[in-house]
Length: 533
Image (cartoon, rainbow, N blue to C red):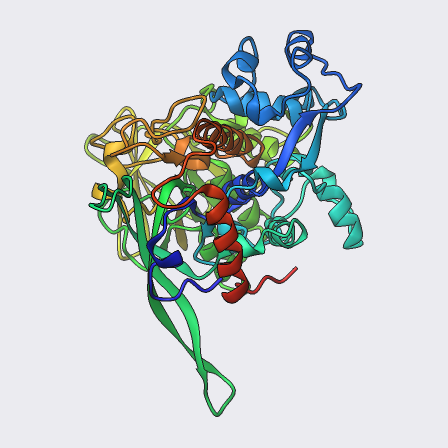
């Protein structure tokens, strides 16, 4: 969709603008487009308490029911109650490896559709398009799918079976892009957009209510040149909305250690830089070790990638290998054998420090990955872990100084260093980068340590400048697609409830029906962003 360089609908206020077109924004768009979940006639849920509650008002859609009441007594792997509820309804007992049929049925009810816009920098799918590679996703295939389109069925149409019930990021990105097309959501998506500001707009003298103003730039292709290429241009846009949803994800800005030498050219901050180095033939079994910093799944992927090339690996991380918070201690071994393998390596092949003279650092040569680790019979050659260590500095001669909790320092010679300790969202379009919205208002917004604080049953932002601001997905601590769908349910339910309360009442000088009518006309005249399915 082409937003042009003026206020859309001549200054009228849109019901909803969603910032971010990844799986969070796509799922919410699906619910706002009239697709409505009901308890299927004759269906039951394996949880007897939830099943009893669902049968109390089976004629009501899930969007009309009391979500807080339905959430009572449910437990799951998310701290967000509606996420646990919706996951339990879409994938009953999936944590136990069971494949129960969902008790929900989806009905398309056009009268429930709420006009909305989904803004995204690239094609639908968000950050998944930047993750293209051969690594398998952490989640099982059915955990990655969105309502109404089975991922496995889509994969079969592509004549490919899902390996180990999991898929690659490239496949998932293609699925999300196809989903938008398959569900006829394209008219609500504006691609190539960068939001630069979200501010609260006061009530106007003509009686228009307070709302949100969303401004930014949209990339548009200019005139075609003689050689067949075209020059793109960025055109400003300005939108007014009653409700604005923050769904940008958290993969925009890689987290940094903040240590000396971190900007040296051999220090990288993304897995894809490692893949690029591999494709250029820069790493092999004769290379100096690669240093991987971090104990998350991306760090594990880097360890596996380097190990596949027989490139030696030093692996430094701040946690203990037995820390319950370590992601590897939370994953079933049978479902994630490759990550279990990394955890074994981390546990069994730890650096055993010698006793250097006082004030001296232990130096490891490039053979230390096999000689210093006291390997077990099942050890993996060329790997050495440094639990409870931090990076002190990187040196221009490609040496890195590590320090243990006790203060013991070790100097390692490396070919490359990969700092893979997470990422921060780009919330530059909000005041102070969105910090006032976090649980800890003076700290940077992060998925794990400082997510945006929201109401657990509506996902409305607690510290927003006014009503109608919501957040979902990684911004509120939901990193897995499996659970971010609950945020979409909470938001869609709350917006639908507000509209029911205002049913029949004119907002300013127009009704919701009039907005939808004019919106459809506006979309018919506007350009649509190109989607490849």
